[in-house]
Every structure is written in structure tokens, then in C-alpha cells.
Length: 187
Image (cartoon, rainbow, N blue to C red; front, side):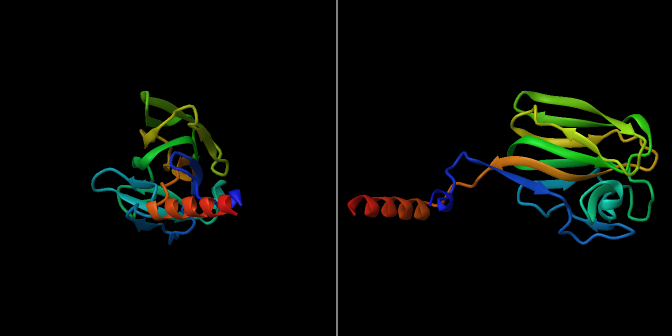
């Protein structure tokens, strides 16, 4: 019975954004970045966000990954990717995919309750091996930026996993719970 009860305000639920429910392709398909209730994706002015099919080939979840470029006709995907969360999130992890180089190949800026922090993305020079980025040390994350991409052909992201607050139940739902509890006590 407890599992059927709605979560109370302030409870966290784990969410995954993997882009696999989006129309993707080879060549990649332009997207507006408005496909999740928990996050908005964007890129630099006059650049495009793209859904790229083939994520499984680069160690992501099949079929899609998200990337950004100066245009949809390029073969270099090195534009910044910005992620703005609709509510502050916890325990964030994400995969950076498609790296060709080693050393520092990009930076991730994390905006959180303590301010902002920058982490280096270290390439493993293996196009088919993801770079797992664990950002769970930061609480109340509101924005993440993948910037300063120097990898030869650019990068993409996949498998954002995070905890976000569960929406508060409506007043009607709370009243029905209270009524249910009261009727059980009377019995």
C-alpha cells in the first residue's frame, strides 16, 4: 500500500535523459532542445543542436546522442552544449562520447548551490569508449555547460542521470489521502 501512495513534496526521483525517444539520423537531425520537462538544451547563437543516430557505436545508449555544431551540414561537432534544469538536481552523471584525442579535450562548467566549478574532460583517444562524468559531488545543480571542445571532430553527450524533486501532489490528491486515512481509522 505504501508504494501506491504519492511521494511527498521534497522527495527525489531519479530521471534519465538519453535522447533515444527523439528522431535522430545520419546525418544528424536538428532539434530545438525542448524535449524534457526537467531540462532545456541549447547551444551558441546561430549554431544548431543535433540528434545523432549511432550512439551505440560510441558506447552510448542506442540509438541516439546529442551534439552541437555550427551548421547541420558540417562534420565537426564542437559547439558548446548548455543544459538548464527546471529545478535544481542532485547526483548528476553524464557521458561524453565520440572523443578522438587524449588529454584535456573540453571543460564542463557546473553551476550549483556553492557557486560554479569547472572540470576538465580528459579524452581517452578511443572513439568507441565513453567518458563517464560524475558530477554527483555538486548539490542543487541548475546548469551544466560542455565548452571549449578541442577534440578533432567534436563531442556528444548521452545518458544524463539525476535526482530531481517529485512534483507536489495536488490539494485534491492530499484530501483524498487524508479521507482514506480517516476512513481506515474509523474502521
